[in-house]
Image (cartoon, rainbow, N blue to C red; front, side, top):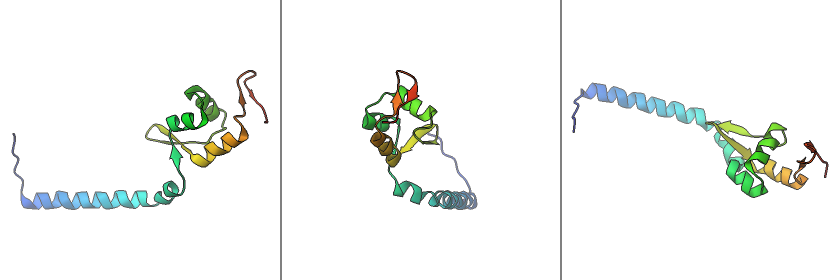
Length: 103
């Protein structure tokens, strides 16, 4: 085990810097809190299970602009209301002609 000794003033300085960083982080995320509390967000797996579709079909929905999504840390998230709207529309993607049907 290695023990490192530092001066109390250095420790106090690091503590103050950490507190400032925490305040900055909380301030930056505070404006996004209402967005996430208003709406339930789903990841790829949850959407596939909810819609009973494959990941490839989900990718097609995204590519065609049929299902809006947000990307956070290289992971896609979807609003539950958008998924429900697409479900209500009756899965408009038709694999036979690579087009869409208006059901």
